[in-house]
Image (cartoon, rainbow over the protein chains, first blue to last red):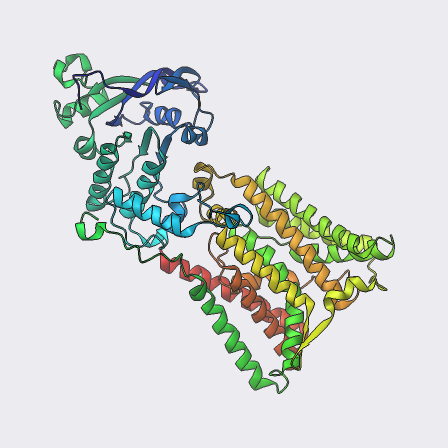
Length: 266
Length: 330
């Protein structure tokens, strides 16, 4: 990360509050995401991690507080609105439509129609172009899947997740949110997805990575947002702090104030 | 994946899943086997006249099976199909005779009534989120009762000629074909096109595959479902037009076996009852298999109650094959 110049904030949230009945899931949580970074979001169960992500991805609407996207205050009433605003979310469950082809999955809901009357009158899909674009998109991200016309379910879990990430990267204008993208995967497949996440970042998108897997977080994250008790406890620099101290901060065994100043991300 | 050799995707694979040929192969084999079997059992089976008869008989179930395929592709099931077909037939024949409406308008009203029932099915499934099985079990009985009440359990006769026009035949060589068969094939062609070549059709598959994920990518899944149930209802109405044309009467007891026959046709045709998988051409082949069984058993002198029994066995076998192949694929 370039820390000398003031990095541009792609997404920012201030004092988010979300209550479910008597339970306060978010208790004034702040959030900052910079252009071209991978920001890991970690936290114990009940720390407000998933509520924060739900608010950012439009899955829930916070009771108070504001979310800014590129400096503009926004309010999402559904994940679809967030998507339209340029925020794509990759969910844990690997696939969109397992029996459909890779190209169809990539373009589901954003199909390209044929030019001319066949597209406008007959509403025919331009399958050839969608396949060609899928090939190009996956090649850009160096995802090595040979045929775009094979069903998604014929792929391994890691490859499926790569398709889901590529789909998000292809259509996100600002932010890709990934909810435990490596959770269901083995070591090798997880590594493959992490590599892809880095490439997505290198193409200029901001990535939010929610993960329980500390080695994965340390492998790819530029900064680590630690959620605790419904708030942002601190933001850490993974190059200046080790894993066990990070976990200690996450669980509350170590207070952020007690950390050496350079462990905190700027 | 990280292998640089593999990072050059093969652009040669430009074909969309061939699917069709492979998926329809199973039912086609079943069809051929059934034909061979019945040919050995009856001298009359292998004749142009008999095949013409099978095609005419299959037209009604074939059209119902299109609607049923759409519903099953979304992961639902429509038990009301046969009874809606009967109701549509009674409505259009009574409207044309008792009310004296022009036959074309009367037929449109019949289709309208079945489409309306489809709308009710769709609204209950999408708005109140009831299982389609229960919803259509209810509308099946409502449609049956409405058919009996409105017809007074009497067959409607003396229909205007236009209503039986689709039952007329034309000859190719020495074999007779009914226009109703042509209409069925045309509807299959339209359904094939829409399901395969348009976004709307692909969304039907997506909804059946994974409704929640499909909703999250921004597709109005509820609207897809609603449209499917309405179109299915309208298709049952078209099936009643064909049924009335072929029999020349409005029969309040029509459609009793068509329900099971249509579902059997769809499942035999390789469409998964779990939704999201299948091809429409398979349902046509499945309808032919059911038609060949009924026809062949009749030629063998097997009573109709045994035909129902055989159809029941067929549907269970087909569903079992579907279930086992899915399990194997996992």
